[in-house]
Length: 262
Ligand code: ARG
Image 1: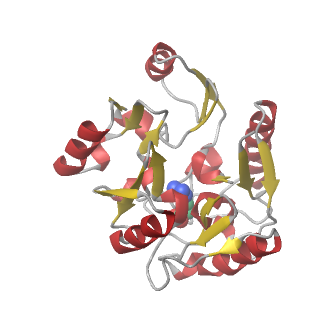
Image 2: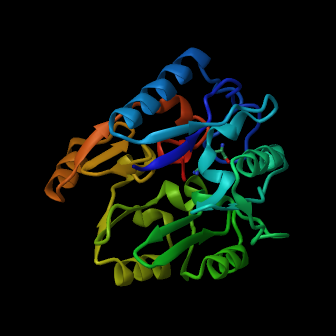
């Protein structure tokens, strides 16, 4: 049974601007955010996902984006080191949580910026790391070495797609969905070369966080996207399970950012 960690949005808000999506004046509707989050977590549970919860720290409005907590593999947790001071207090809360759950905490990225699963994703026997805006390439080297995995590094090239999971979605062993506009020519070449079936997502869908998705069996959970993309998924043997995340897009995140794989 797949397991994820989520954080209910008890103190979610836009209190600062650390990526181009965030505008303090573009306020969150807390009730709507709660509804969207509840719908997402119930949908995951209905699909058979076990959802573990961590309470939100009062002074950490972005803590709902648990993908950035670090990386959990087996009983080991590798904590992140946030680039921006605004999110740094989350680290202690996440680390305390994992320790209490009996995980071994290995600080593989010590002294380096590393934003967890937001920037480091598995595809086949490789880890794919996105660097530049948040995580550092050398952090991914250290984490991959600690996990004994080969690393493929991709430089992110567009500030709106500041985390790898905003523009890169390994759907299964064959297919990677990605937004070409978020990478440079070299990055696009690397993706096309290593992925058996690279599928380019269009600009409008990318801006709706179509790549910020989570697959459970034959279902792909994601924000509302175009009919064309849904047809594309269908042709690949999958069904889109849309769930609105507009309140979280205001902070620059969607489905995949709101969960951490356990
Ligand atoms: N406002 C958050 C930030 O800028 C959003 C994080 C989104 N998370 C992700 N995995 N892409 O840090």
